[in-house]
Image (cartoon, rainbow, N blue to C red; front, side, top):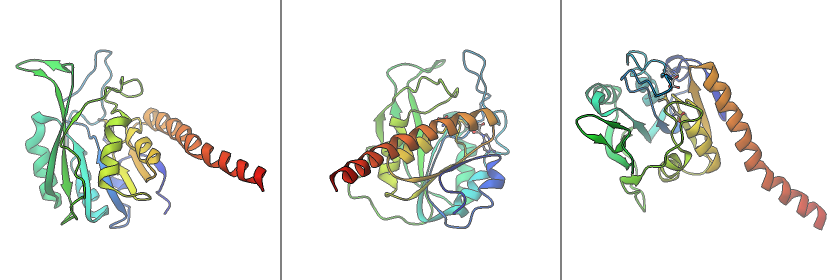
Length: 230
Ligand SMILES: C[S@@+](CC[C@H](N)C(=O)[O-])C[C@H]1O[C@@H](n2cnc3c(N)ncnc32)[C@H](O)[C@@H]1O
């Protein structure tokens, strides 16, 4: 498939829209939350001012996902009404909710905000896992070096391991710095990412090249060793 193990630079509405039906095994994504996010250094997230070109992507994801496939989406708690309406209108059923607890507050207003959250959605019915993942997990801070809302690979890998199998195609239509794709490659899954901003596409591709080398090197060494022995 031309899409697999690639990071496509462009709009997910078009790129996921062009994917064959049922081609994706798992979606793990962190869309813009619709909150006009700005970090301490002034960095912003594209399409975070309005969700108009973000929420329709879930219709395309539903079509591209295989029956019984999961879509795990982070979201902003203060826009849950719009996200939930879009997920349900796309056809998804809610299968669970996950919370990651932080030992620091990302913001202080009416509360000191100490958690991140994601919904686990499913297309139709899925088989129950033998050993379900706990829905409360410790947060790992990424440092946000490559992207203002970068997720740590350590947060994403357990999701990918739990909701897909080796060789499956994992899709992130809002890929940012490529953290989901890196996590997928490291646990032996194929990946497809889409990102709108050129600069993050470049960063994600550089990261992914490093992972491909990291994954390939032990194989090369084993091949060299067996060649030496024979
Ligand atoms: C919250 S960030 C994802 C950060 C990512 N999880 C990481 O670890 O780096 C959302 C990303 O979606 C991208 N984006 C927004 N609208 C998009 C669209 N319609 N198609 C593709 N990417 C989009 C933004 O440029 C942004 O990088």
